[in-house]
Image 1 (cartoon, protein in one colour):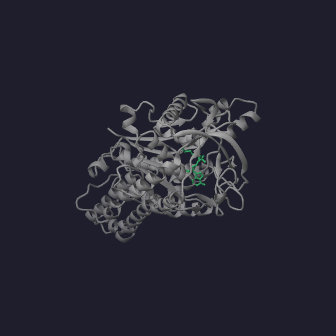
Image 2 (cartoon, helix red, strand yellow):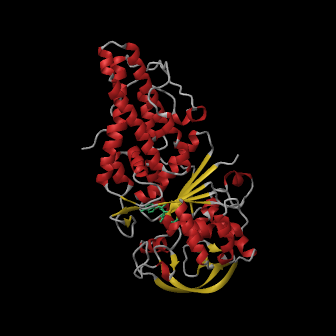
Amino acid sequence: MKKYYITTPIYYVNDIPHIGHAYTTIAADTLARWHRLHGRAVFFLTGTDEHGQKIFDSAKAKNRQPKECCDEIVENFRNTWKKLLISNDYFVRTTDPAHEEAVKHFLSVLHEKEFIYKASYKGLYCPQCENFLTESELVDCKCPNHLTKPEEKMEENYFFRLSGFREKLIEIISDSSNPLHFEIMPEGRKNEILGKLKVGLEDISISRATMPWGIPIPFDNTQTTYVWIDALLNYISAAGYPDTRSGFSELWPADLHLLAKDILWFHTVIWPALLLAAELPLPKKIFAHGYFTINGKKMSKTIGNVITPDEMIGNFGVDASRYLLLSAFPFGTDGDFSMAAMKEKYNSELANNLGNLASRVISMLARYNGKKIPPAAAPNEINYSADLEQVAMLFEKLEFSRITDILQKVTGSANKYIDDRAPWQLAKQQKQDELKTVLSNLCEVLWVIAHYIYPFMPVTAQNMMEQLGQEIKIENSPYFMDKKIEINYKADTNSSGAIFPRLK
Ligand code: MSP
């Protein structure tokens, strides 16, 4: 059976992982967990991009082999993802021998099919992007991503006949009934790419004559593969290419490539053209999210304004950091990051709303019902289903912040229900049946919310279930498959402290 195949970009191994990288990876993880909750087999891929000038130069400066350095620094990413509870199924490195073989095989195929030719190339090169830039892409004569001046560079390179795919790509992208159609989301980004394609498309250089740290071109080992071609091929090498039999077809094509807008062109134009040339299926959906900015500037190592996941985790813990990043602003747009705003959001949404609901409910069960959850006798008075019904559609559209808004709304309604029904009054008036109904309704909502927040905050969600005395692991819960709420009423609930202590 075909697995749901979701990818993040492979990150430059010599970067310090920052919350921009974490943003994509947490989004992919949240989505992967959501699909797994529905019983779907998922293959979630992330990894590192390890060739190129920067790594070569930094290894040389340390008088070490580049691979040795990569083996060490790749742990920065692996450890960060472990800390952030990233549940990737595989971690690909472009220095993996299997990846190198896949790249060589792929380029040989393209060479045989005559999609590759040799020519001389002159251009403006940004070493940080590891990419040639056109005049029109420059802002104040500088690279718009790195704010540095590109260098003039000329060399004999191998070229890929990208220009020949222009019309085909326009057709495939704009016509949703085209059998090769893939979606570019959000919609505005698709129009941007189509607009750019309509202006024109040039062949691209796919090799470097002067870069020793790269995968040798299989038909000319005096040249190495251009890092971007090397990097894009990770998505198929990790799926088993060049062996395109059963294992590969269970994974490829990718269902979703997740990335930020800076690398959308590579993924929506160059990547599909390479696949078309090799006669391989195209990915189904490519989603470009926005940037985390600091005072309006993209967070990046070169600009020197990065915030690390460790800083976030130190302030808010792992689960809250995941939640805060994904709920900060709509997934497709840019948003300015400020720790003060994150703290305010933490206190209002997590401590005062969700955390407060959990501790109120658990403590009322201890006070009024011997720590037991009263069985449900009638339909729930808290109207939460209609709101939650939208969540699946919002996951489809990757509208994470609208999902967290809905979860906040449902949590808010449950808190308001406590205020309105005042269980303490019911207890005083000895209205036992009514009191039980109120408590039962609240527990059901808490149980359901735990399921819905699990993809965002897996540890807290499970902790909520434990406080409710429920042994079931949410990841194995059949709730999303059969929509049945199965609460164990015999178990004792227990308060193991606030799930989100208020921050001063
Ligand atoms: N190695 C290439 C990708 C090759 S994929 C075939 C690369 N790596 S990168 O380390 O620069 O990571 C780029 C990705 O990191 C972006 O597409 C995005 O997913 C994430 N982000 C990096 N900085 C970011 C922000 N400031 N904000 C949001 N996401 C950002 O490009």
